[in-house]
Structure formats: C-alpha cells, structure tokens
Image 1 (cartoon, rainbow, N blue to C red):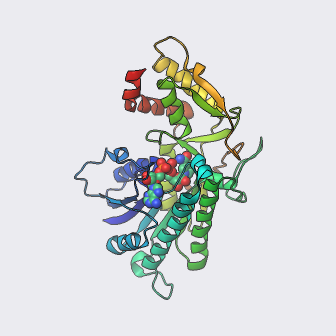
Image 2: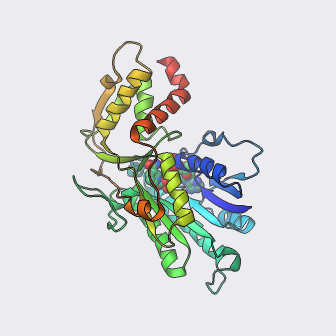
Image 3: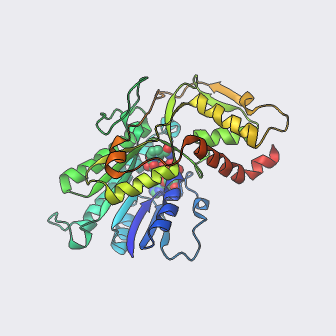
Length: 344
Ligand SMILES: NC(=O)c1ccc[n+]([C@@H]2O[C@H](COP(=O)([O-])OP(=O)(O)OC[C@H]3O[C@@H](n4cnc5c(N)ncnc54)[C@H](O)[C@@H]3O)[C@@H](O)[C@H]2O)c1
C-alpha cells in the first residue's frame, strides 16, 4: 500500500479528487488532513464507506508542525497533494491574516516536513523516497488580470492582485524554491475557475442557484462584464492526477477549459436552465432576481488559460463541455437543496 497525503480533502476540489483517486488507484492509502474550517464538510465524502481500508481522515491544521511531522513519520508518505487553503477572494479582502497563515505558513510546514522525511541530513534523497513527489494545487489568479486578448501561459509573470492570489503566489514561490534549492520533487498546477458538485455556497455558481431557488436577489458585481474561464471540477482532478504521475519535476502546468464567460452571461445561462428545470411557482423568470451590486475591490477583469502545455505534453483534455457540466452541477444542487426547494 502506498501512503498518500491529501490536504484540504473535505473541501470542494479535494473531496472530488479523493473519490477519483480511491476509484482509480486501489493500491493507494489516502490520508486526508483537513481542519474542517467553515469551507470543509465531511458530507462531501459520504460516498466513502465507513469500513474503507484505503482512507483515513485526520482532523487537523496544516500549520501544526508537530502534527504534520508526526503524520509524515507515521505514514512515510510517497506523495502529497496539497489542496488546503483559504480560497475565497472576498474573505481575503475583509481579513487576509488567515490567508497568510494557511496558504503561506501552512504550505511551508508541509513542504519542510516532506523535505525532512524524504532527504537525509546531507540533503541526499533517501532510497525509500526516490519517487516521492509533492504536488501543489494553485490558481491562475497568481498571474493577475488580462485585457480583452491574450491567455495566461506558464511563462506569464506573476502579478497577483488580491490578498488571496498574493498568498497563493507566495506558496507557489516556496514550492519552486524547494525544487531549486533542495531538489525536492515538486509539480505545481495553476487552474482556472472550477465548477461542479460540492462547491461551498459562498462561491458564484452556488450563490446564483441557491439565491434563485430561495427567491432572493442574485448579486452580480459591477456591470457583470468580468470574464472567467470555467472548468468542470473532474477535469481539474484528472489534470492533477496526470501531472502528479507524468509531469516533469520542478515544472508548473496550467489547466483550463477554454470556456470564457462574462459573469452576467454565466448567470443568465444558469437561470434560464433553472426556469426550465424548476420553474418559479409564480410563473416569473429567475432572471428577474438579478441585482447589480457595488464591484469587488480590485476586481480582476479577465482570466483565461492557455492549456497547451498539459494538453501536448501530458495528453490532458477537458472532457466535459460547459453545457453538459453545468446541467450536472445544477441537478446536483437541485437534489441537495431540497429544503430551499420546499420553501420555493
Ligand atoms: N475553486 C476554484 O475554482 C479553484 C481554482 C484553482 C485553484 N484552486 C485551489 O484549489 C485548492 C482547493 O480549492 P477549493 O475550492 O476546493 O477550496 P475550499 O475552500 O472548498 O476547500 C478548502 C479546504 O481546505 C481546508 N482547510 C482550510 N484551512 C486549513 C488548514 N489550515 N489546515 C487543513 N485544512 C484546511 C478546509 O477545511 C477545506 O476543506 C485551493 O488551494 C485553491 O487555491 C481552486
């Protein structure tokens, strides 16, 4: 059995990833270290049966050096998939302290424990860890914002604009430095906006669906013209899996769906699907609930990923198109928001 550490596995992407990994690699024993912050939810993992031998949950903080070191000592991890983070830009604008702590200090604690476990005191890789690898999950937001044209490539200079993206950029730099300084086997993925089942209700797509069904205003920042490049969460998970197993050490890989939409286009698409799938009882359209609100501070105008590197070098391709992915997502929320539906 190969012991694998996954951090933040009770969150949106981490939980989808754990289910994917458990199905695909029966020889992996997954240790999920999650603090269960407001964003973590063990219900996201309820598909895993209670007597699953290949899965262990540890409730704890990636910044807790003693705990992290004890887990590395006990399980002798051969791989780390590092998802745990504070992930919501709006929260980082209100108070960035926890972003600095979890995203920067937490990443440092993990990668330092990996180094201490995998290398001897002469900085030589121990025999048992020749293939051990640290995969860092990051975001396209580290590249800042785009104008009307152009795409983020792996060569785009970092220019983070929010405390969230600055903290992720810092963590990416730490991971990069551990490859260059110590020779730690690292890979980093920088992905565009994800959507799909199990996303926390604070994020844009769940907010649109939840507020629509609750007959509340649907808040859209500014004029709704900010553009995001949407990727179905399972396509992201498959990209992370491929990068871990076939990516080149020390490299970064952009992952994105070539699916740019303005926020207002996205909102209207979702609401028109809801009009079909779950019409309002008063016969009106959910579109009536759209409300423009004061723009987010420093709101990045446009993100768009050039995924040529992962497509050409690792044969990754987004399998889900937006029209099918958003239907699956909406259906999942319709099924899980029964309480709200009852009130509608
Ligand atoms: N959601 C996206 O669109 C997106 C896109 C690109 C990259 N990412 C990156 O992917 C990763 C996962 O994102 P997500 O959307 O699933 O986030 P999420 O907010 O849904 O989940 C984060 C998880 O981390 C856990 N966590 C938070 N602080 C912790 C700590 N100190 N110790 C241990 N666990 C802790 C939370 O409990 C939660 O389960 C993040 O690193 C994020 O930056 C997200």
